[in-house]
Length: 297
Image 1 (cartoon, one colour):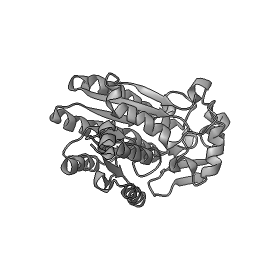
Image 2 (cartoon, helix red, strand yellow):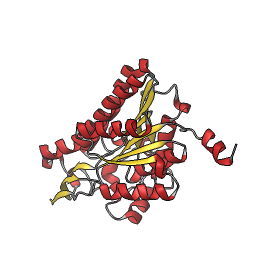
Image 3 (tube, helix red, strand yellow):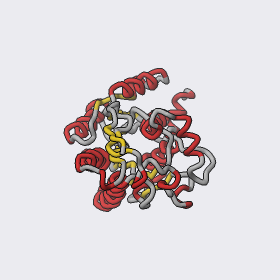
Image 4 (cartoon, helix red, strand yellow):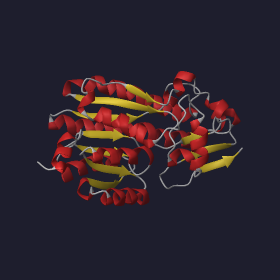
């Protein structure tokens, strides 16, 4: 047996296939690379064609050209989500893991300035996108009869009244609730459903084009002295994806450097980003490649 064979046999996701939404940047990209290194085949389902192509090029340079695929996906569109999951089946013959990770910052600003269009956009991507991922993953995994793992990106914003903008927080709370309900419904099929609640993670979605300033401010935002990184979320996702978590379902794992333990106090730490003191109102669209729609207050 060669060294490569030994590494492959010891990989925690050897022989498994995963779909990762929002896998073209940030936490999703880190998870794509971690899953590939652990032996999985990975389908990247992402809205942004340019960053998707970049991750494919990076993975190819690392020797994973045959193990990774990019499918352009708007997670708010049911046919797109279904197509991404079916691509995993058609290309790799099975579906074992779905990481419903895609998200946007969505509606920001005072609640009295929040439009129903901003509400709808945020809920469509952040909450409905997860629902669609769970729905179609469950159907495929149930038909396969071999169980599986569904992982959803929630947020500490789901757990506190002062850890994120109002609509975003409500959408992420819905993700936590869906996770628990789906875990109960799918347990008999040996399909585990869990959520990750990230704290302040320095990603392109969060940094607003100013990564160094974001890293510095995030380093001071929680008790842990270093800022959160995509790799920290990838590690949590790997735990839920592999058999180490075989008896864990319905969990919402907080990965935040002790932020919720100390109290997020977002309005005090970042006074101009949310709530009544915000200088802007509208919608941010994360790493989708689309421009934010904001007005100055």
